[in-house]
Image 1 (cartoon, rainbow, N blue to C red):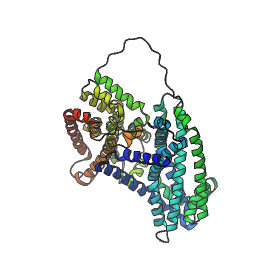
Image 2: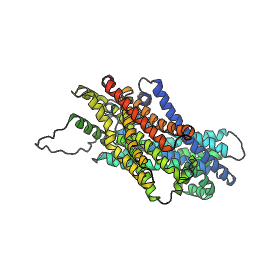
Image 3: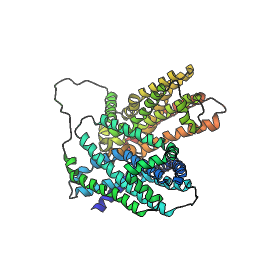
Image 4: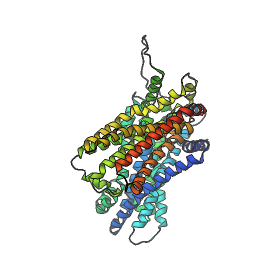
Length: 537
């Protein structure tokens, strides 16, 4: 039975990422995303490892940087999968069906944890390859490939992933106990997610700086790790010193608690799934219901779905977090942007005069990222889509309500971002109009593009809601298009058009293109929206 459950769970993961039909375009986009992530993380880890190894090897403590990167990988595995574990283990739609079958709770739980472990293994892969490559590059003796080191590091990373997965699952278990007793899950989940979100990017963006800092303070860090984090010492020193006994001790420290955690979780798994969840008591009152137009009712339904689905809200609502944090930082540093310029100097920024242009492109990036939330709106209807289809409502009203949600929920924040940019930097009247109009044009294009992509690439057979907006064709295509357009536009201006027009002139061209593209998408949706919507099944 456990083999069957594992097979089903892995097929569901593949289906969630590539779709049931496994179209070549969808597979290509997902693979491209993995490759992009792999290259970015390796690009940060390899220099950090190489710089620190070169500085630490003469003192015989090169194991320090290997241990630090493993800790970073552990933290990112935990942060990146804790909410997914909560959804997969305790909120999965097939829990009731599996509980009604003669299947042991431990088998159900193990199949879910195994799938999360596979995800974490992929997540940690660039840290593994970056560690091996950076260590080989950083060794002053130029000894080349070290097979023993590589083998032991692979074993260490497997142990780390197992332990990180179990810590993730035990935290998801505690999360389920807390969320099961409160009403406003969205607010609590949002606060917790923001904490994880900030921590995740803090680790990622500081990896390159870690190498130099660790090289300068290697001995004190080594002493601290050896005293207070003995497993990290066993892991890293075992690999760099080819000490198999250290590796065995490390694996025992990782695996024994993991087994204990699994045993505790499977004992209470069924009780957690069967417990009565909190529901707000509603007292009936005999009163006249307010009358609303069809469009307003549909829009309220879509907004309620957005703000009432924690992970959906966090996945796209997070696009307003960065602008608000960024603007707060700019106001705090209003009279001294030197530290920000130093941070951006790696990208060629030399002085503060470039900041308004960077801010303008950041505005485009944030707006396009949030606007494509419409790429998941049809997916989230799931098995209830037939209800919308059966109602005597024009399809154009249904699609318009879905496209309007980002305008209501997100656009005001982007406009605040624009107003703040106008206050912070001296700009011309024409630029003021540009900064105020650009979020509207960007949102008009990408909200309709996301909706059109969802009509063409949909997924209704999801088990966890996460699959509807994180691992489905429409959202993936829309998100990669948003990111790809930003990169393409920046490269186009830098290498082609910068000699002919200034940056804000280029942005006016962008604005015109977005308006034209919005009109074309509007025409397509008006003409083909009904037929495409009826084909979704």
